[in-house]
Length: 415
Image 1: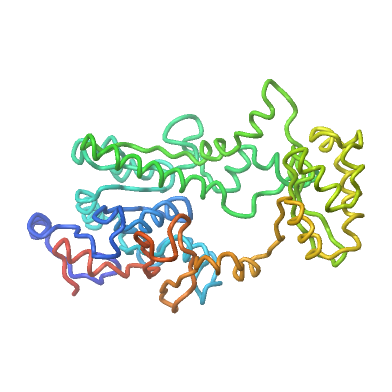
Image 2 (image 1 turned 135 degrees about the vertical axis):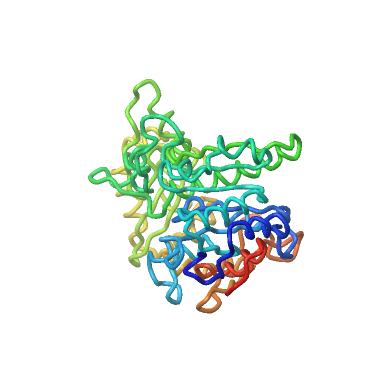
């Protein structure tokens, strides 16, 4: 009946009596964060919804992740890089309870609806139309559960001509114009992370927090309709306004900035690169005199303001690279720091794991998985020095790991 016959079937009439008599979603006692006592039910997969709910769990919420029996969230199979587990999944699913249900089966659907009846928040990013077919839409639930907050995450929103289109991260990047401003000008390039999913998960998270605040004043739930396209277009605000009234768009500039120059990576004599950024004319003069030892360059008519530097970027790039050709990246960084010019290392992922600033600020901790402990970054904004409350950093669950405990709450015992 439940999760591959792991649980003893209970006759319908008896099951309903169990629900009425015993049902209670009592939040386990974890580190008492601001969302302790809040229960979130999430029918989620991939990245957008899981990233949203993991952040709610970070704040102490109880998150029950509803997964397909056996296989679970398909992101579990993306790769095996974390001791045999998938990198995306480990990142977005700590501190959750996994409940394996086949919600298309009446028995499991009934369990889901009973759990939702005691929850504070319902999050879902199922295929277009799937939540409505399962009776999980806000319009269906609002009268029976007036305090429930329902957050739908989809590619294009709950209405409009694109409503039923499938949407994956790269597809939404393309629709939102992101590919028109990335790459080298010769070929577009996607952002190297799931930026549309991350944007959607972030807006869903903040919107749920706002809805919980509103509910504390009105005792009423609300509907949150998160569109990946709209989240991505919001983040495209600069290039949108840059093309205001039909103006030409920014030209893709690889790792350099499209409309500020010099702002990007420059090679040094030891084969490495440094990233630097000039934001104003004072910095430009310092850069020319103190870094390049060419003070007269600051008044060169080709480079006397940012618009001209952008227009003549190729000539200026050659001058800077020539100036860096006889020094190492370490020396270039020293000169840039001395001149108060913003700069950064061009790190790969191994460099980030070993980043001195993250270590100095105690930003790394450890979480448990079914394959042993792995490092995890403390969520931004939380102190690593025991100031205030610490975020919840509990294990990454196996598929259906919490079926027994959750179903016991609704009066169903293991066989």
